[in-house]
Amino acid sequence: MELPNIFTQPVAQDIIRRINLLQPGTTAQWGKMNAGQMLAHCNVQYELVYDDNHPKPGFVMRFILRSFVKKIVTSAQPYKQNAQTAPAFIIKGDRDFDREKTRLIGYIRQTAELGEHAFEGKVSHSFGALSKNQWNNLFYKHLNHHLTQFGV
Image 1: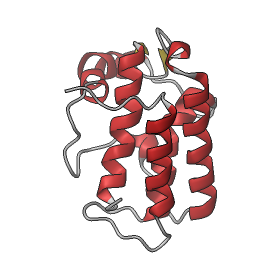
Image 2: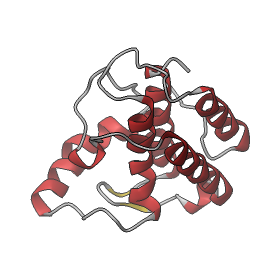
Image 3: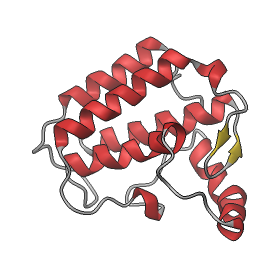
Image 4: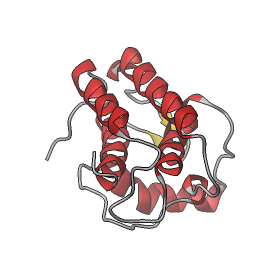
């Protein structure tokens, strides 16, 4: 199964359209996060690409991530509901919904503007070099999972 290409404007715009359907009080169909926390959670994957504010995993953790987790997050296979997440992605406390929403939309637009060619062979913070298809799956699958979680 191939996932929609998040690097294209139509797919990026559709994801942004879905994000714009969210409200601060939109409730999750599963899980513990509120809408602001979910947006902050989705921002983490882009922070790992564009910002240098997360520590790189150590040797042992890098081995585990590349050996066992990489295939899960970069394949087209959907995530299971209530699956465990990495510590960096756990969002505690309230978040400013509008701020997180604006940040996420900005990251999605930046990624689409750069295009898939900018991601071919790009080194991931946690998984090493990834193909453009693996990057697409990582980005699209995660966003789609959480937007579905919130019914949009």
